[in-house]
Length: 467
Image (cartoon, rainbow, N blue to C red; front, side, top):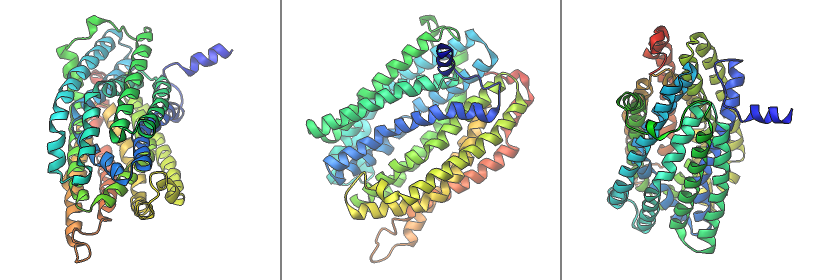
């Protein structure tokens, strides 16, 4: 009896049968815990450097993040395309195609990672200077970025392999491996910074080591899943059919990430003008925001796999039913979480720093952002469904409109309009306000395109059930 329970617990989830809401929650909860653990990487980095090194070190870690994310766009596209393709082949029960898709995804990950590992260290400092990074934190930012780029392959492989596991319906084992790596990251952070006094470089090194270990665990798990596909060298090649499908499905998401990252780089340039205190406050808010967003992205990921598997199984009516249930669950969960953050906000901000001004500014930022989280819950669930059905273009265009055409111009306009003798660069509160407005606009566009979008064409033609 016990053995049967454990076997069911660790089995991949078939989302083409059973009550949609139950399947979505069962899939999303391990993914949510995993995403929270993933967020702990950067959060623990920030807490450790903020507590043991100082507020400027905290600002350095945050200033480096937009550049790091900008250079990850090749990998993001591959990961998204692989997850969609794998989930659809799993639903269609096509073993040979699934084996080719996984092997091709792994090789594309290696090639894209090598490009970024070479390019990243070369452009890190010039980009930091271009963004007007304060001289007081410039060297720390560069050290942090170079170490992360050199060790990128571990992070890339964890994310692509965990994405494949999710496409197969197995979000639980990816969680188990991530929790082990996360615990190791925390121990190494404290060891390298508090014991060995390695500063910002220490937290970057700890992150790289932990991510390499989690990627190895994921690879071992995939090798054990012989009942679904074959992990053999003959499938690890750049097949035109599968490479083309992965790129076709993943390119819009990669471009979306590139657009978002570029907009964040531009916003970071604006943020840097407000000085080290606002930079550090923004870092704290983004770390807390990362946790607040975890339910949103977890349910969005669950909806992608859910839609992909049911599209592959040609159960189109089931997709519509699951979208409604999954979206409402996501909205309810994020609403409760945001309520907790608003009530206990100052205590949460106090984990990162003992500076009262930083705590006050960060807490005000979170209050401005609050209403936007509900909007994000709706938009990401709908966009996740579109991606699972093969329509990755619509979410890309929504991202383009909300981040580049709306948020960035709005932030700079408000900064200009709020300038004064006391505030020569404008009111710093325009940073969270412009972001909140962009989230609301994105939710509105997602609802419109979901109701009338081209993604529905995928449901009308059963010949497109798989890439």
